Image (cartoon, rainbow, N blue to C red; front, side, top):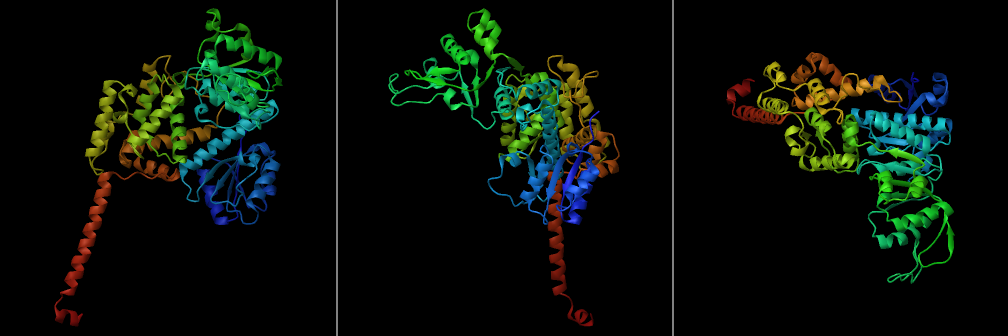
Length: 549
């Protein structure tokens, strides 16, 4: 059973601290609040060990310098992540160890979703830090976009990475293009004893065969035509660190022989040179090809294969973990917003259709789609009708129902009876089950079918999971219903007053429709015209009436 964790809230303003504590309690977190002066005594009374605190939320520290507070917290629990709210007085060149523990920085005008995202990322950091601590030799666990997900395949990958990261063995990462093989390699490096040394990647398939040897081992001046000066190779650049050989299956056989010798002897000579250079690098390799089949066909050396394939990690394709598509969408959009490249949202119908897509380009293809939709529909909501044709995988009936729903929502006024419109909307439950039933074993649906495993390998925080799920479903219902609360409530099969309470709990604001914005503007203009008319009428009053008044 997972151990209960608490959030440490540090704020020197009593009123603000109380408000933040209320917000955190609403989202289901157990909170221990304190001022910056007495946080240590307060938290040690509340927990039996530091590992029970999953996050320190820091805001408005007046009694103690923020930098000193971070140092004290880090000394108390090295695996404690920090979320900072508002402007903090911190040096520009913050210690890397402390900087890596700041998982999020939020604005004073706190909103619901960024807070939930920050808590989620902090808990992941805390969970992985403790897991790596159990293996010994802890290194920072950095989150990468293509490793986001709760499906069993990606959980297994993260578990294997935790096992091998802090070793010196060679790792072969296999999988289709776009699954994130280089992301895994960088993560392994950053969580190894070589993290403070160089990580040097080289794509063996992107460099002409005649230049690959020079790229790897360097060359001396005059070694070949055009070599006007000496050049350091990738092995020298990566000395003490990690060399990542991407697409090693494209390496020619003659080069494979030379690479094998370097891996065995731990030394090499530059092209055109005679001086032996010692090398200390960890080899990580990746390929989308079947190397064992290439060995049978005489295209890859078996002895080299055994050298690089000490610990294999196979990256799952996106179609094998289609249940992660909603989480990946959220992460990609969050990253895009953080980089100032726009924003976009997808309604439930679009998400269900994307979960059925085969994704030949994997996460790279999904990222491409998100950026394209953000350009075509900036800050808008992408529905089925907005998706490119190849991403439409719902039946004609489902597409017609979704189109009819959108049409009825745009034409009917908010005051009309919403029960008829609600009947034309495809329920999320229906979409989920239809995706699961029709996608087959090769393409999981939006939600796993009955009997499938929903629980990740290492468990989850059920309260947080259900709160996030409820909040996301409410947002989708509001988006699909054009912001009409009554219709969203009908979609969710709850009373309107219940939905209003939940919206208040999650601090959700319904979006105004264009008709409402227009009506509001028209009403404002009518009010201004009436005021002008009253003023004009007052100025032309009968003098006798004015005198008597």
